[in-house]
Image 1 (cartoon, rainbow, N blue to C red):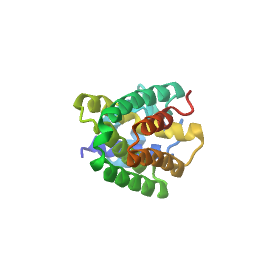
Image 2 (image 1 turned 90 degrees about the vertical axis):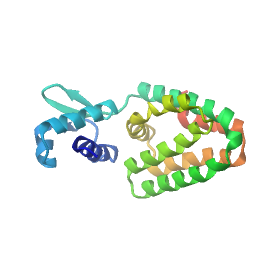
Image 3 (image 1 turned 45 degrees about the vertical axis):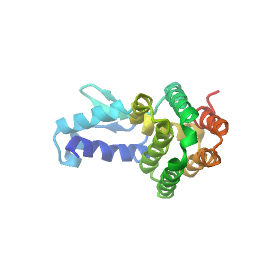
Length: 202
């Protein structure tokens, strides 16, 4: 891992776990001193966090921790819903190798929630949904879906605050998806995917 990646990862964890809440100013010089790195390294890390939707950069002044807007969150959720739905329609019949992976990802998600670690929950959530979107074996569909991954942290932080739910509730909402996969019920899973992504936006 490069220095900018390490700094970005450390700051991402603080932002997602609300150690750096919305509207917190991130001053380049102070961060460079704290991490013992150059200001150029901090700038590279900030650009990465900006692309993930976690901060906004005020040129030549500072960066500020932001939250994804409800409209942006809805757009990301809608795109993921469409792609995931398209995957399971054609791929769910071949689910034998899917169930074990989903259970493992859900167990990891639950462990992250127990530790109150949203960063860990985001990682396991990404694994969980990557399995669903990959079940059809369509490489380009999976690639389109993965392009949205970088904003999952910002999306989950924003959604949890907007809906007023805890990490345990975020985890439990995935159990409905797993139950539908285990039952082999495509239509039930399609509805569960829609509810998972779009409930509260309709």
